[in-house]
Amino acid sequence: MALVVPARPEPLEDAEDFHVASGGAESNVACHLAAAGHRAAWASALGDDALGRRVRRDIAARGVDVSAVSTDPSAPTGLYVKDPGRGVVYHRAGSAASRMGPPTLERLDLATARIVHLTGITLALSESCRALVHAAIAAARAAGALVSLDVNHRPALWGSTAEAAREIRTAAAQADVLLVGRDEAEVLWGTATPDTIRELFPDVPHLVVKDADVEAVEYEGTARTAVPTPRVDVVEPVGAGDAFAAGWLDGLLRGEGAEERLIRGHASAARVLSSTKDLPAPGAEEGDTTR
Image 1 (tube, one colour):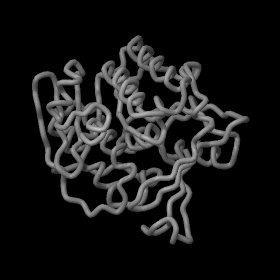
Image 2 (cartoon, one colour):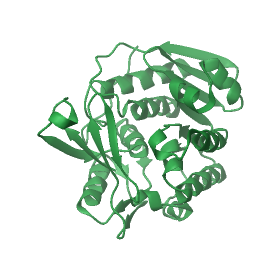
Image 3 (cartoon, one colour):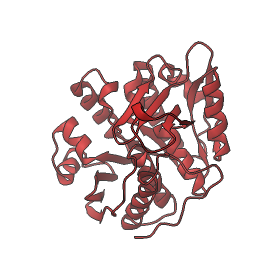
Image 4 (tube, helix red, strand yellow):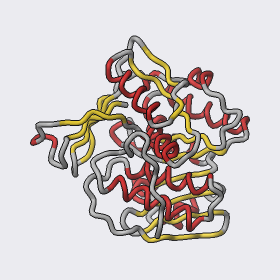
């Protein structure tokens, strides 16, 4: 999607100058992983418009393979506007991405993929997108890739909480890696603690529960590892979850253990929390992570 953000960290209604950039959960993760030195590809759909061309160019400039991104001449590029400190305003109904479906996978070569990363946002966009997510899970399994799913619950995109809870849980139970905020899980499934979330998903090989400014907990089999959230002067929280996911996946791809993966996730999220931008500059490398 295209992203519009005030040039300074001030409320949207007071801002006079804006930056136009690229954003979106899956593309954010791909860009962070590319910046960390991994091979990353992004599959999506953009409109045949100026914003779509800009997004494609921007994501490609960050080292991400965009050959699986299609152009829809009859639908616009999705757009979201950041209101610093308050949230996000979405304009994505009827967007090109909302029209995606299983045929989107025909443009992807998963033969050498190690991880296929998906989010609950795509599940929420449309019935065809929901079918795409389940087809992607099956395709990843067939290719021998791990399935990563970030819940990314966006209530405004769903018809009801019950629908979101049902559909996300169905997909989440099939994941090898499941990332979820404790607050999201409580809204969706009534689970109040990381341990009760684990009870809901006992067979997911890697369950990562993010508890805001308290800690992040990873369950790997019967092992439980927790790393406290570092203190950060928060400028803007939007995009931090994607950065955490990318940092954690970076650690997994490097063969690191649970504690190191969580540390990487925290450090990546902290860089985004302290900025109004979701992504590092094109060509920039993700910094080394420390406790």
